Length: 196
Image 1 (cartoon, rainbow, N blue to C red):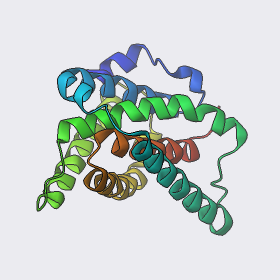
Image 2: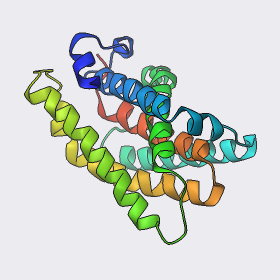
Image 3: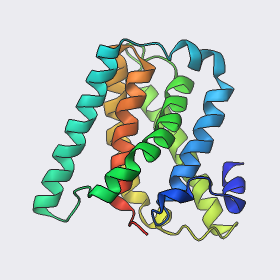
């Protein structure tokens, strides 16, 4: 449904990220739907102490800066520029809604089911990516970078979902895990997609 809407209207076109605005719009709309479908749980899990929230955000920013700094120095220019940082808040909001909706839909981390929960979350992300590929192939969205970058996103999602699950397990907070995952997702996307 979201891919169908994006065929006619991309709400975050203002990001001016080549094909990144399409992905951010997808995250925004899909996240809104997930949160609305699980409205009662989403509202109940939105409460968290500021200490936990700050800790998750701090850990995510440090991890993002370490990875992009290392990549920038050794492989490629992956450091976020000023104009990319300007886009970060809006991209973060879209990524946050999506990751928070995913966290709420997955439920709490129960001891002994961590691997199963991680596999379910990755399975849901595969379904999400298949919807995006459907948009490319059958709706001719033209967002071909999403298909070309799929292996990188697959690796990113395996690692970031494992990290978000660890944050959720130790904090007990879906909100903290979503902030952690959304910061990493927004930073990753802003590094990958060219500014247009």
